[in-house]
Image (cartoon, rainbow, N blue to C red; front, side, top):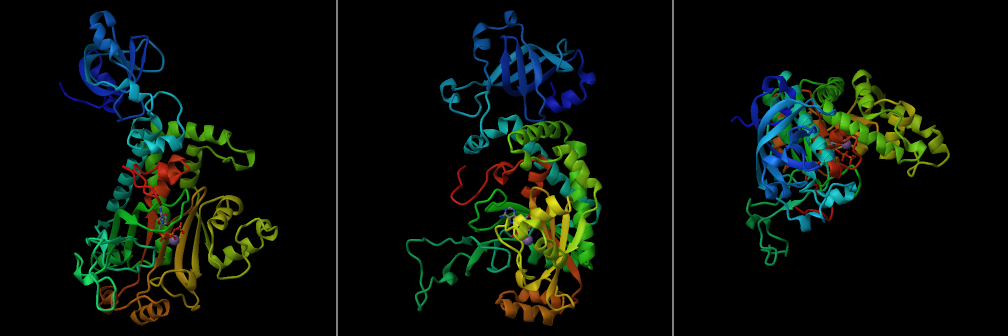
Length: 482
Ligand code: ATP
Ligand code: MN
């Protein structure tokens, strides 16, 4: 008999009415020795299995409990009860795995409400919960939509290295990669660690961004994007930072800053619309969770919109485009700044924006996603294109409600001499990046790109608040269990 998922069965149940089918899954609940709610992870919806206990061994029935796994064959019938369209009248039940009932008491599989912290400690089991099933199915849909967006627009997916020879890509602190026996490190004559003796014959790190390599690819393939894991050894214990996260980085030859902003806006709207269209059941569940969470917050911190409503608004709104200079004026004149409510007060042009400022602009002032552009050169990376004013660069950040920065990007400096000057000024080693400079030596063209943190987008679409809850096995300072 053909194996099928519960999602496929529920979607096309008419095809199977009064036929025998086989399903596999885990027991979510077993009521009155008669009704099993079976879930196989393919959908948030459970399948109801009706068991006539007279037809089965008593010992078999006894061994069925929450969390045990079953293979069931039976007839598909229209359901008598409310709450489901169909149910399966069980003819054959096979227990694939029963439970260590004693140990089960200490796990999150125990059917009651568990805190998100507790669920995080048992990250290997949280896939079994409604909440994390929904989150990870939505995460999958987001990833799929990302590939499909770029594929529809003539972009090529390129894979950039995870282990990199560069040690200053300008994006953040790096994790070193070594094959040395740390208890006996080879030393050079001046008593430094001799990386020439290491596996790659040089010092290597985990990548913080695939951008520089993606730029090289765009200088031949035209439109490319990377989508892979990136690593940052920043010791920031926030709800928006991971030490290992997934980044999407398009890089486009012949694009300028405005094209780049258009691309970012289209891209975000496409992915969010895709989730609205394809994850209805999971979103409905997450929407309800979001609403309940709001009720636990003080009135002033509550979201003004529900989750689905928020997503629908974002795809309809035109993102506000505001220069850094305008933003500084708005922030400087804000009530928050004047009354000293910001932790970091804004008094001068040139200040780096903190997330409190980004969120003020998005949530209080504009009440819309905001794209900030033309930042001071001093606070941005060496590869961003210098504007004619000589003091700002063609950078852009997309800021989202509840999240802050979701995308950071720029038009890149394509002029070799300007780039070299900038690198010297910022102390970036031009010798080491000889290959990057080559892309400006032979047929250099204007180009632009950005980086999106996948988990920040998943946070936004799921309405979750901690980034540790939207990646299966989070890596943060002090945490690398599993
Ligand atoms: P932030 O200011 O929020 O720390 P950043 O300016 O260091 O971010 P970029 O180098 O511009 O970030 O990286 C591009 C995108 O990658 C960001 O817009 C964000 O979505 C995501 N990102 C950056 N750092 C992290 C992190 N530690 N964990 C998860 N996502 C991140
Ligand atoms: Mn940034």
